[in-house]
Each structure stands twice: as C-alpha cells, then as structure tokens.
Amino acid sequence: MNGLCECGCGQPAPIAKNDNPLYGWVKGQPKRFVNTHQARMPKRARKHGFARKGKTPEYRTYLSAKYRCTGPNGPDWKDYGGAGIKFLFASFEEFFTELGPKPTPQHSIDRYPNGAGNYEKGNVRWATKSEQCFNRRPWKKGKKAA
Image (cartoon, rainbow, N blue to C red; front, side, top):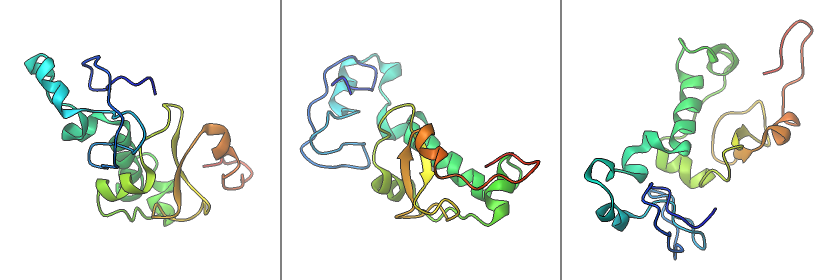
C-alpha cells in the first residue's frame, strides 16, 4: 500500500490505531478510506469507503461468492450452489472480519483448507492464482476443473 487514501482525494492516509472492519481499517496499516477527507473533495465525490459497499473489491467478492452459492440462474451455480456448497456468512461485516482487506488486486477468495467445503469462518482466505492451483478439485475426463 502506498500510504494514500483510496477514496480518490489523493491525501495521505494516517496509520490506523485499531481495527475497524466497517471502514476497512487494520491496525498498523494506512487507513484505506478516511471520513475527514470528504470535506476536501468535490460534492459529487463525497461518498466513499464502505458507505457504498459496491465500490470496494471486498464487497464485490462477498456478493459474487454469495451469488455463486444462492443464485440458481447464475452461470457458476452448478459448480457451487448446485454442487452443495453453501455461503454461511450472515453479513458483509462478518465476512470482512474473517478475511480482512484484500491484499492485492491479484488475490481472490479461496475455500481453504477444505476446497470442497463451504464459504464459512475458518475455510476462506485471500489467495493468488498460483496458490489456488494447489487447492483444486481433481479433473474428470472430458470436464474442466472448477
């Protein structure tokens, strides 16, 4: 992290003194979004951070994983919800508390250590593509690995 606030204001972000999952603050790291910066921004850009959850990579990941397991009309349903994999996080806050902020844009969610298990506490992590290659289901002849 470069130490700048990700709200788009370009101001330096102070170091977080405590964890606050609602705002994505992790103790000892630069704050990703700082509420006081909004006064320096144009009025149209004042909403930022977790106030608009859909704008954060963590919230988009939360929604995608939840939809894979609960949305029967989704393209990945057969490999997730249709295969019996459940999404067991009750809220985004619970999900974020378990995973924390996304380390880099190259990371995505991975069910680990039990790759065939549910999305639940103790069975999810942020992982790179190469880390996820070691946590795949075995290939079946004539089918792609999921």
